[in-house]
Image (cartoon, rainbow, N blue to C red; front, side, top):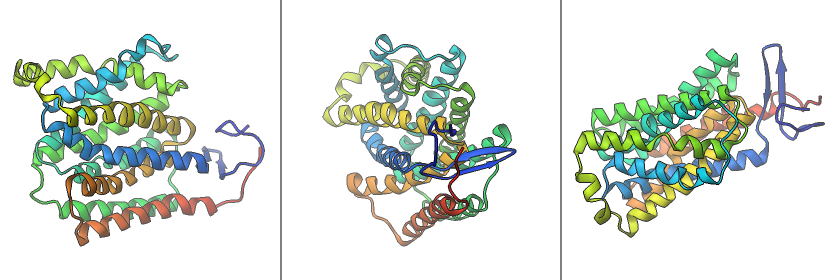
Length: 316
């Protein structure tokens, strides 16, 4: 039986050694990863539409309230310690998405926000090496270099589009996402959708409390008037697309594969983020941004696709 639960000759590639058993991604999981990253990328400009009328902390609190309720009454709690649920919920809701929304509200362009959050890939690869004994292939190292060049290209072309504080918040959110990835691996959770739903239960109260401390009662008083059709559509996409479906799919991949194999796929998110900004917000891509996207896609091709040819298929 392979690490992913399939016997016999595996459709992908299995790399073994005394320090690691690594399963390269099956085609169906690769398709799932691309779909997840596409929805996540489009989520950034769609979130900006929702932030036009609502406070960023309040919007995040509403998102996780609807992600948890009423679902926790119908879905059994996953078989993990309560501490994992609390930790993931707070990191996921407060330390990650609240900071992303605050950064966008402070002026960081959605495409740039989608890019900055991808520093989580580098953080996650580091956690994989430090905590799980994973080792990076030469292709992954070269892919990281190409991706870093792509990140620098877009950042250099984004001067003046966001505040220093906004950029800092996005980088902290990227670190938070990498910690969330570690929690998924450490907890050993198998019931992925239940884990997302139940962990979401622990984000709203801190978020509503921070909203009150920051702005008093005004965001709550003005909530009804801010929930127009566009805001409701944005909120629904964030809850049922970007939270329920995407985190179910992403955490399933983390359950089945090493974090160093899954993390680089998140580099597709800024590509879809920029595409979504073009379609929804009228954003125009300049030569520097186009070059950055080419570098990021090259990073994926070198770090992931090339890895399929490194060794012959293995049986067990």
